[in-house]
Length: 219
Image (tube, rainbow, N blue to C red; front, side):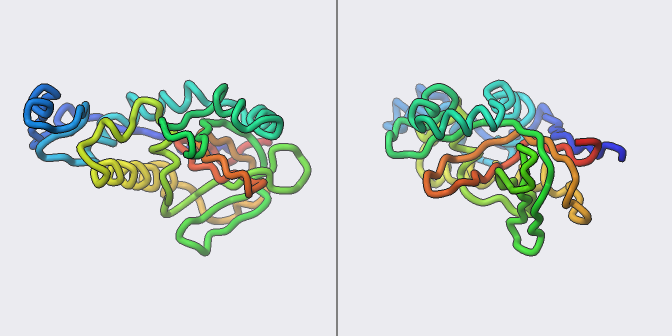
């Protein structure tokens, strides 16, 4: 069977932030504003995500991604130790650990009826789903945003802009990574994924939000 590869491609135009008036940190501080590397008078979170997707976001996750089976064993032994070694979370110690990961397995379960479509992936050859992988068409939550170690709330002027950035990240992943994926005859096909998941102690199957997916070929 041929390999269907759905690569993440982002064309970063030099005018991606055209129309935005950038505000210098010194100007913000002088006017009582927050220290903000990304703020602009014409803040456009969608343009911001598009401008850094292929140059910062994807390389950051790919560089830190660890094989899921390694993460699973480390988390089972000690979640916090695994988080400090392989994961990332902001300054809030109560926030969940976020783990960039990569995996290869076989699709054993498929749900394309909900707006947040998913597939269950077996990475052990057991025939049972080890992880859940989002395939869209929508992406929910803040896993992608919270997995980035170069972005934090302090980079934005307020909580609204920080939330808008997370929404823009999800929309970009949904449109450019998940939307091109096939929806038919997925069960039994091999799949390779690079993405992130937020650790949830109440679930045995982490839910991975992909940044790159390959479906097809030989398992």
